[in-house]
Image (cartoon, rainbow, N blue to C red; front, side, top):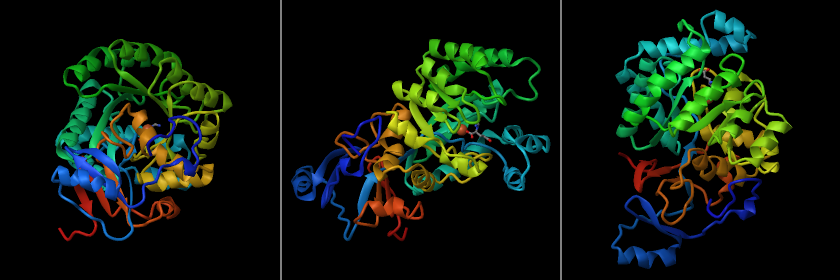
Length: 404
Ligand code: NIG
Ligand code: FE
């Protein structure tokens, strides 16, 4: 995935493929990559341990899921059943479902319980090749409860092999138990919570859900202004049901604008002209039974497209990034190169990470090995084909062939 452009369409024949390849790893990073016969002398010189994979294998960079909400309490299985039985968003909310239900259940969980459940989910994704995951708060919705979530995410990051990139989503919705206005809530979060996020180094990223059921553009502008002043990076839940968030994302030079199911040509062009990464979340379309992000149009307009799972208990309960990315490719007519870029180097850019997402000298040795000699098989099996071996920072963390 190296040498490809960050923006616009990519054809499969632009991907560089090494046959009979070798990868030399030193200190968790790729020291050199190329023909096995060229890499071998360097490995011998460094007295490296040699692991030879016999038979047919394909190696890709570790996958990067740039948008998840995997830290949560409880379940929303009843929402899913009600939605599929034809109930509306409002009817589900009235029956006690929706984001607020997860907030209630997350508040009931202790930090330790959240750590435990998040480790379980993150390790499942890691085994499927996701070596870096973004994880949002947003089910606490008060200074103390958001801190509990972000501290839990920090603890998880310290105790598992995958890298977690935390994001504060205190602006997910106006908490139902908050006595003041949306303006007052956001102002309280930015004055009380933001300084603690900096002090405890809990996150450098601020997200907001701009939507009729959440926050308006006008409410979010001063919130993002404060975040920017304090040096936070911005990311936005944009244009999910109505085309409201992209404009704000571009205005604030956000790192990414995510969702975009409702983006029109106007938003698509606005994003394409900017440096904001457009992140499609096919898992939310599959969970809600609604249309996909116009990924083809975004690429053709010259945009940068990342693909993430949005794994959350409500709108995107599946969480399988590879499956969702390949399905988006089928519906949106994306090349293999475009789908794989969306979950590797373009996803890295959506998290402002410049050390991963490519098999390239100096990059992290985060590797996914698949048991095939044809890379096309990977997406062809629509997510059912999983890696037989996953490496993180130069260590094997999953090996299907090993007995232990
Ligand atoms: O990204 N769009 C808003 N937030 C989440 C849904 C969270 C939930 O339903 O719990 C999303 O889809
Ligand atoms: Fe989301």
